[in-house]
Structures are given as structure tokens and as C-alpha cells.
Amino acid sequence: MDIKIGVTYSPREVNLELDDSADQAELKAEVERVLSTEGAVFWVTDEKGRQVGVPGEKIAYVEIGSSDTQKPIGFGG
Image (cartoon, rainbow, N blue to C red; front, side, top):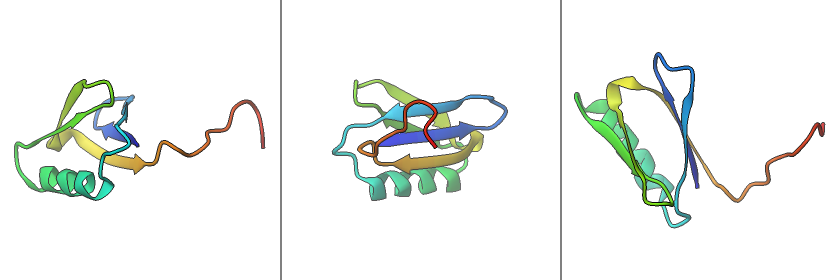
């Protein structure tokens, strides 16, 4: 599963690949909890075991998707 986090005042997104066993519903619930709790930090562990934390106040958006979708290569239209 892939997750993309937009961070305010940052030109780059945080892109992570999570273990396929990650539960989208649980992840979404955790994002909603962090966004509604002052001072909370959204922690996520990628498939290599690295942990990334983003303060809830800095999250602009979160995109959660499946990593099994084919990504286009080249200039196809």
C-alpha cells in the first residue's frame, strides 16, 4: 500500500510504501484522530521498518492507495 502525505509549507510530499498487510480503514482512522487532536503526531512505519512522524498541524492532505496498481512508464497516452 502506498501513502502520500502533503506537508504545509513544504514543496515535497512524504511518499511511503507500506506493508501490504496494512489496513486502510485503520490508517484513515488514525489520520482523522491526529487531525482532530491538538499536538498529535501521525506516525507510520514503512515496509522497511523506518518510522516517519508528521505533526498533525502540518498535514495538508493524505492520499492512501493500493501499491498493486500498474504505473505507466514512458510517454503513453
